[in-house]
Amino acid sequence: MEAAVAATNENALDLIAKAKAKNKEVAELGFEWRLTGGILTDAEKAVEAGDFRKALDLAAQAKYHARMGIQQHADAQKSWHLSVPQ
Image (cartoon, rainbow, N blue to C red; front, side):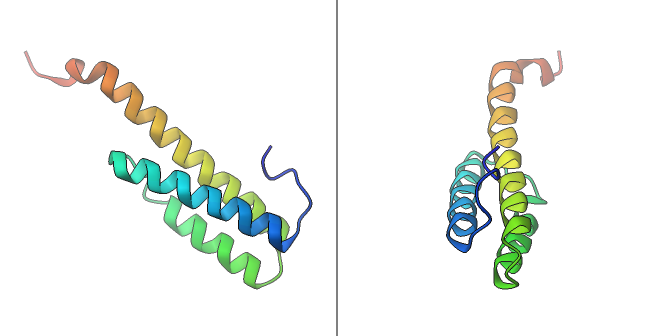
């Protein structure tokens, strides 16, 4: 839904910045998804090419992946004991 804004340079750069911040947050937890950095790079390239809609969509996808990584971390914190051999 965050990408459902006007496809402008300003909106694309704003969402990319938000996605990068969220990705930094999950990286600090150690649960960054490997593909997210590439998606952010592609979003920046789309802005450079003037394809702001694509940039918004990619940035929203990257931010979603970061949020899912944070959720994955939270789940791991709750159930870490299940992976300890008995």
